[in-house]
Length: 321
Image (cartoon, rainbow, N blue to C red; front, side, top):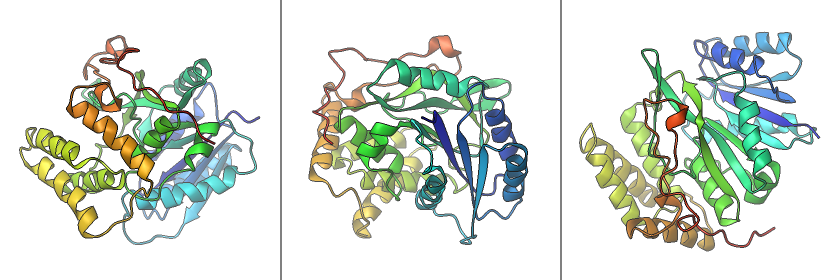
């Protein structure tokens, strides 16, 4: 059986993508295949990908036509699913969705996969996303829920991938997948000691306001509880830039209702998500009560999971086929 395969949708990353390629080529545990999906780039990204494929026979490149604009959440998923076609002939054990603006150490995937091999219930995992400030890697979201793995670098165990039914082609896909997995009895988690450098700040491609609006819409798609969402907006509004982020999140969430956007149409899923979110509001154990709690500026030895104990971890329901 092939070990792992990687799909990278990439659009207009010619300045940063060579570092991602260098990181992949240097891996001590290389993938059986790396599919690069050039999603209509106009800056030479496709040419960079083709050069890499000529040098390494385990790299494949797929070119998509330029749609003329970015489609946050939706566009990347369309490209990702097209890339999946090029690994259908392999009996892979792990599937990786990897962004094209990342840099990571040569043992990154070897160490990630060790987590999966030690824990057969681990369905989705990945490293912690950081940005470089001077000579230091600073964790971007040091207080994320421990179950959340950033969409930039996600590894799926095949059995989990098949049970969750692939990825939603909407904003919020990178939360819905984890919630479905947990509902089905899998565990999902970030590996806080494995740092991945994001070569541009999250959300800069769309602008801060549009990125927050997109996140609010993603929360609507994932069936977030309205009271939990209100608390989230208030919390974000108390951080710089004051009010702006909270208002953008709220507008994104409400716009889903106003536009009658599609969302997860599964009453059991909705009850599961909202039960865990209300537990968090009431200070009870649940998915959102377990935080990464990483010191953003410290090294791997500082990585910890806050409130993670048998008494606080959510109990999985019986796994369904």
